[in-house]
Amino acid sequence: MPDISYGFIGLGNMGAPMCANLCAAGIVPCVFDAAGTAERAPAGTIVADDVAAVAQQDTVFLSLPDGRIVASVCDEILNAPGRTVSTVVDFSTTGPQAAGEIGAALAAGGITFVDAPVSGGRAGAIAGSVTVIASGPDEAVAALSAPFEAVGGNVFHVGVNPGQGQAVKLLNNFLSATAMAATSEAVQFGLGHGVAMETILDVVNVSTGQNTASADKFPKRVATESFDAGFAMALMTKDVALYFDEVQKSGSSNKVGTTMTGLWNAADGAMPGADFTEIYKYLRGDSDGETT
Ligand code: NAD
Image 1: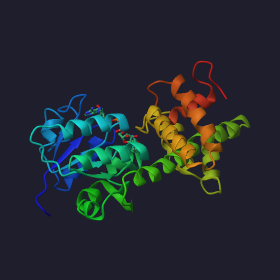
Image 2: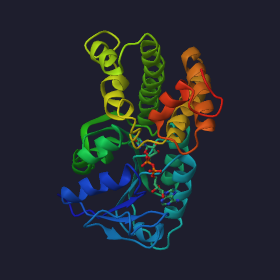
Image 3: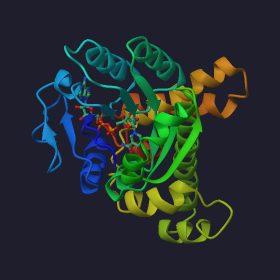
Image 4: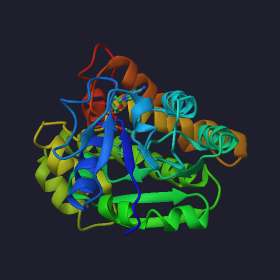
């Protein structure tokens, strides 16, 4: 492996376990999180005082809440005294427009940008099995094969332009959000007819209605009432809104997108701080007066 130094900024639900998997593969990053690095840094990582310290590495990974924060951290990297960063790799979900703008700003400062959003949730981040949806120059993506393999079960290079990875990530999350919401309503319909949730899931999961919510989120997070997928409803709502905006711009059909955007915005407004699986509770009518 070439002698490359790595940095990692954003040690939240996704970033901390992905960082731990980098370490396990012998890729030891210098890490920073604005909410407190020492308490979030996985064992073996090098704790940095600020973004400028991470900017003294060659390749820097980001896992941050949204495009506005990614742009601001990239600005800090660009303005870090004596920076040595040659490549920034963004694992966050920011949308194609933000990714394009961030890529252009970094390129103007001589830094290569690889847009690499991930899918698979916190469970996938812990297991080292997220899907990495990369877009960026061929040679830059090829040079990232070791870290991508360390965090990901499936690694795709979907295009050479920043934003193409985000487009695929957004359409994926729109499908995931739709499955979660539709399954919540459908299960409640079945419960209303006196059928147990476990029975409904047993039938659906070997039938044509099977989906990621019925197969995974419902048995693990909803039937147990644990609602602990580790993905904030606010972040899923952000992704659905980004998808909606991009579809509006592209002019393709947005009828389901319109319904989903309204639903997730309303649920997020009614349930601040909720996990995204709690859309089930919102549709059950648990939150203040907001019901189906
Ligand atoms: P999170 O809120 O748990 O983690 C984000 C981390 O970034 C926090 O620890 C926060 O303190 C840190 N941060 C915020 N601003 C910062 C700054 N200016 N400098 C340094 N650190 C800063 O979010 P998450 O769930 O880990 O998601 C991260 C990204 O990955 C988001 O874009 C999200 O949409 C995406 N994503 C999340 C999941 C999931 O299941 N949680 C799955 C796939 C993709």
